[in-house]
Image (cartoon, rainbow, N blue to C red; front, side, top):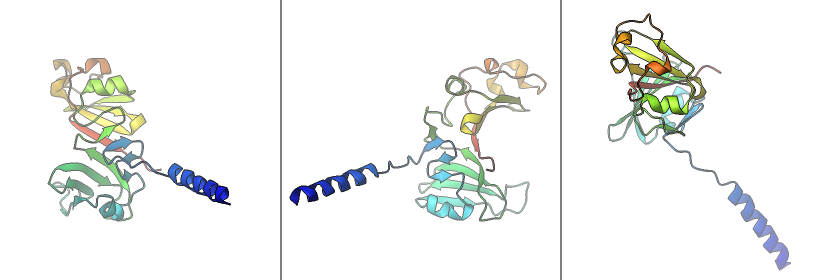
Length: 188
């Protein structure tokens, strides 16, 4: 009888120890996830996801002054972490469409953050495409749902004042700093 109770106790301990969940890193960027934020979280749920942080919602009605569907996330101490853009303006049941990564503590599993340089992108990810805009090169990395901007001042002179020349990965210096780091969650 004692042997049977011991066996049942051992099985119960094994089951509970296997169910132990690994705590989610609040700064990890992965596919469809940034820390505790996922692509399925609704605007109305942000208060619980960022319970330890401050949320600032745009109230400006003038489209030229502010984006009305923009939500800024700050640490309690005032450090800006993220800028979220809702898929639909003024709809609390909408999900997040775009996230600007501001704080460099947010990183991918390969260490890519807003403080990274182009070499970090090039060496660790497959670049899907590069767009040449008026003031930036926009680098798309589809495998992590991300795009990055690099100021054209970081590029060789022949690319700085035109949008007509195709920019290739080999044209961007390794030390070029990331200006903006965005995650874009397409509608499922």
